[in-house]
Image 1 (cartoon, rainbow, N blue to C red):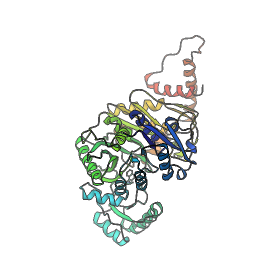
Image 2: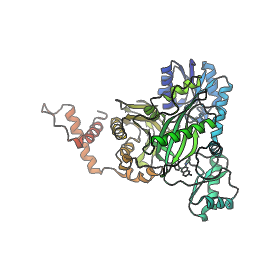
Image 3: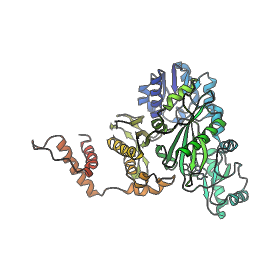
Image 4: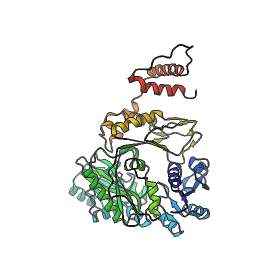
Length: 503
Ligand code: MV4
């Protein structure tokens, strides 16, 4: 195992990697921009190197500066985290060429999965099911019309260089094919500098289910089961869980085998994720492979009992995976991404200083965060403040535990998505697991509008003050009032917290 590692990232994932290193006795080097000089991940690292001003383009995306910091500090390995340079093949190669260990997949595997059409071609060649469609870029609208007619409407035009839903157009009517092709091309050209577009059959109302894999340098590739990631808005995941209510052990096995085949086809090593669409008939289709550790990895850690970041480090150091090829999940895990966005205001990003932070705890409650009391939240980076992850024996208990943990969370100073997550936990569809990739956007108006009326708020404020007063024992020596009825208790806990906030 290496003695010292540099983390080419920031925020909660940098801290997550530092913790794994501590557990393994590896010294850590953080790199940071001026905006992060006092960030928790910088304080937690053994050493920290300033790499530039706040904009990512002048700091966390400066590969050469990061490699220079690694060499200078005597680090032997580099962990890329997610985002930033994590899926840039040139950076993986530059790290390797500098004589450092890259704690991620080989540059060649990143490249093989980088183009959507190349990944699709690779999948087809290895019997991994993909959505019916083509892999060749379309020449013109006439050809698009012919292919669409062959597969049947609706079809989806997709950018070959794709990702994040850019350069994508659903076409339901043959008369729209030419204008949709133009629009998809324009968007693809803008986003990726490549206007190649191809055709797929459009899958209506699927779930987004992904399989976590882990591969070592000795040819062992394993599946750690699925994550259900359908609760998303504008291609940003909000809530993830493991396992998925839709996946049986038999389906998990087949999806796991498909993910392992895709990983093998790409010569994959380290942690990776195969994304699938799972339709209403429970047919699944490979979409793409994410060649990095993902934000939502903790739900898999909770149900598999395997520390994914620790195993990223171990396989990068040459260790063999000691696990069976398939892991069956135990219990249920849910993650809420707590962001500094205001759901009541169209998810407008909020900035400021975290004046007060109270973090949930207790059995099987995990808080992966990049902030502390006193941290400032700006606009330079992603709005994710923290991830709240819980585990329990059943999905129902996990939802109840998440609800409790969210009530235990107080963030003062910036707006956050906490209240939004509480509303999802209380939602009937969510509780039944009746969700697909369009569910949240369909449900959002109801979730956001479910505001208590002004009068209710005023009554609650008065009641909360009385409860707080009772708890402070200031009732002139009179006995404290009785506890509220069972049905009112959660409301009372919330009111009490609000009332006691700031003394
Ligand atoms: C699809 C699809 C339906 N049918 N492909 C969106 C981003 C890109 N990774 C693939 N995406 C989709 N591909 C076919 N043939 C629906 C989506 C899609 C989606 C997929 C995963 C998670 C969220 C999504 C939101 C909208 C559309």
